[in-house]
Length: 354
Length: 261
Image 1: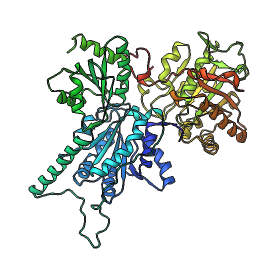
Image 2: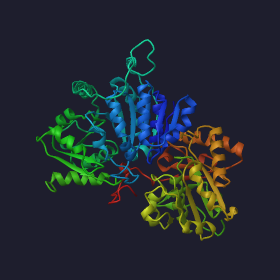
Image 3: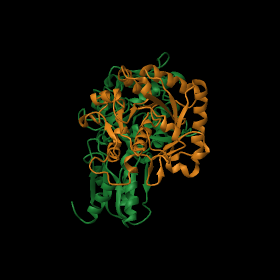
Image 4: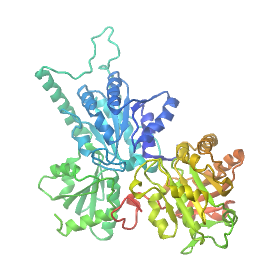
């Protein structure tokens, strides 16, 4: 198929449709409304369902119900809308149901603005809602990668019976890049024998999460914890860029910020300052082993984010006290420029501004 | 547009021409040029380059960003580059620059009715972006306008003649405008090839045959000119130098407002 030019939001929607995500429930919010707009047009063509629901709270509860009935379901929103969904996402994780949630992050906190941000890192990777749960979190850095990660998101949601979050900042949703769609193959999935599909001739399946008996509730918590350990073992994804050498600095950045860092690295090369990048593709599980290994060939690490410092905490956990880990961030909808990253690397190299 | 005097190699910047085969087209330009089209057809990039090219001809140029739909990659991001080259830029107040509130300044309404030199209007994408024209065009003299439909054959909903006809019709009915010309801007940004441009010209010719809307010009990024002889085609060519870049594509220092040019 010939390459076409797509906006991140449209491409995410098309890729989800091709991956069988034919039940979409949503509520519009900038900067991801093109997902809903695209699906309103596209779902009728493929016999899918596009349904705008009255609020994000309701959307997430509809996801819960539809996922419980065994359907491949998904939604998308942006930061404030995702916050509204968090209660139900906790319920979905507790009931061990699969769904995909796309968060095209805008700047906050509060109502914030509509420009790009990575300020929802904590919410995405540390649970987000109440209770002891995690979501698998995928963070594309290009429109093509967003296309490629959507089928994986649906597969892993089904495989782990767990919510999967695809997180992109507003830039990933809004920018246009050439893309192509290729079919991805996954091993067969187990049957959804837990789904509430009508219980004639069998015991009812239950998809709630009420456990008044502490013994039972603890069992569920340990079962979920074991699942997250499996994710840590099997699902870590990352990209290494220019790390096959001794480094002055190892940059750690994801999404749009990683693209900025790659340009910065080329300029640092011109100035004879070898710098590499580790780009997490999964934010949970976090590529802590890879970061630790690479850190050992760098003098220091710099986490570059569109936040005031969130992922940097996980980088520090990964590295321990073996190497200094610094932070450079912009917030409020500002995107760091390659020059700013170059300057920050040079500043820390000179030992200043610690 | 009358009173347009400068002839010869059109709108050169440092020896690099903005236009090829365009003498007649430029001489026949009306006062107001309106750029409409599908989302992501490249309207803003074309409007900005069009403005820069006309200002090189020594005529006053005003550009108005009427994209009230989407806050990303709008022509207002090129404000500084435009103003440095002498183009007057009309847009919502600075405090409202990063919003998607549907506001049109009184200045823009004024410029629609009368003014010196060329006025270029950059509409938002799709019928929803063109809707703003429905109120603006009331009372204005339509003989003063050209409205250009920008076409990218590599966008998902403008791949075929019937898709394009349908979008054209929707834009005309929501805006109250009659599209007068087609502009071919087939591209995949950095992956554009000569073949993609040729494909766009063929598609536009097919649309033109049905709608009787002529092709005004072909937009080609300067980088692609290496593999494309602009004199080999029968249409005017506007050479694009990308002004609306992604943050990591910037070559120079961006300053504190690093999202912007």
